[in-house]
Length: 349
Image 1: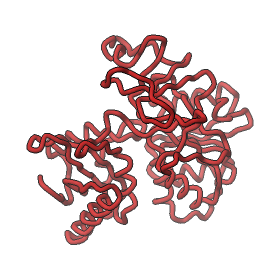
Image 2: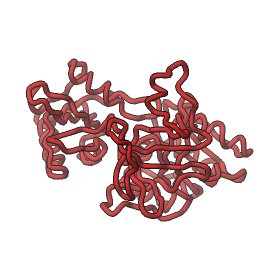
Image 3: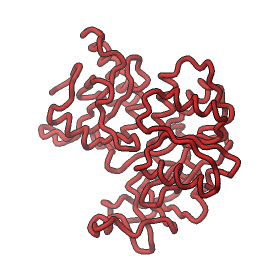
């Protein structure tokens, strides 16, 4: 609450599920402890306009969503008549990679400035690790690719170590990517009845290996770059799926996308597969072929990697967790086992 700047004067709106830490701890528990009123919407919100309309109706000052929620508003709430989000003082964005393009598009579309604030946390740390301060100008790394999620919250310490499968577990210098490790009073004692998994993530001294990749700059600002287990290795180069997805999501005709690496027995390396949910399910085969080519060309131009396959699927096909994160291992399994309802396929099958 302190890091997010929530006070008793705020009015909070949330549609996040209460069976997820961000919705339960961040929204349902924290505001009431301060005496701050909160309005809850059903988590299966189909029309994002309902969320924005409630913010408008009650003059909400605070809300929370993963990046895709803000992106969904820009794409699907074209008519902003009757909506006024100027009461918002902060709209936290977390639970998945925060895209600078999403923040810029959301704030521009709805006529607000310096409202969307990146944040970072995880259930194993009882949620908050870092939250960007209200109203402060956003901070990009020198490459312009990554947004800082802020400095660690009070009582939280952060170190960047070599990933757990690398030895020795040296601390990484300023600006060098590694595994984010956290220490705070909120760090868990362990996974319930699972000492094996607990031993993998808890280190001596109370430090928690998060499984997330990131780095810290010279002023102590944290940047989250991805998940260790999600990295795609193409020709010895580490590729962050979110970088591919940001390119694909900008293609006209694409609703949502996911990128995964699948091991090839023939080459002994990973191959890039892109799954894209289409906006129109009644387009012609020629239109779908053109869409596949456009996706392939844009990814290649942006990152130098040509997808082995581009699979077009219906809306809501890509599997996600309760908090909206893409379930990449499950998606890879669906591709390998032919479970996807494919619209078209590009590349070797």
